[in-house]
Image 1 (cartoon, helix red, strand yellow):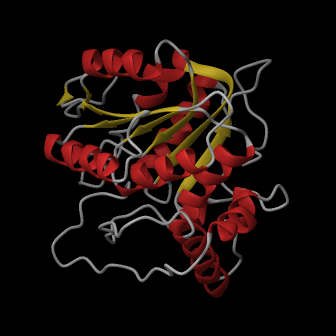
Image 2 (spheres, one colour):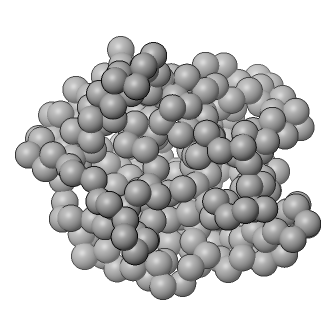
Image 3 (cartoon, helix red, strand yellow):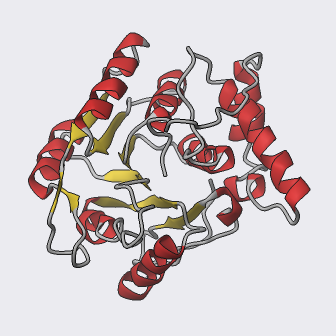
Length: 271
């Protein structure tokens, strides 16, 4: 799940807030340390070290405290997203599901803007949470090029029976306005919620719906791939599109694919 509303009784992780911006450059942005490197431990001890490493890197983004919860995306998974933004110059970013991750990615894009600027959109079904994220972006003065699109969950032709996806009209209109007709070069699929019993395939419509909006060379990242539902979503996406998702970062909760420029399949991700 994305960095979302903390639940009652959630344990909040400790974060090192003394890191400098140089830590982000050294731990996130160096070409010889790819996202897969940060997220491929061979043991439990190595896995814990990698998450700690990622926490230091993310703390370098600075800013006020944000409400982390135990339902959050793994730190190493978010670092994989940051790596792709930095190493591959992402400038048109779309996130399905909003939260603290939206704020952190906006901080990164604001601190390291592409030469021609950036635009980011986060699609959120919960109106109160969409409002909180929008207000937080405004408080930090990093929301000028970030749109939080409220799209309620509705029945969708591509959703499994009994499941819903984001309102198609709201998503299309919101992305058109936020990206001003540009295609997406980084798609992070972190919603809608898919943790409840019987809702494991809730995120399946994302790639079929948005594939035509992806620029050649775009990266697609799916979160929570340790869960059976998301694993089935990946299998369907791969079978139906020929896009191959790489899972060296699976312990961090993400699978990554690159849309190649010559055909729909992908090569190993660089970030």
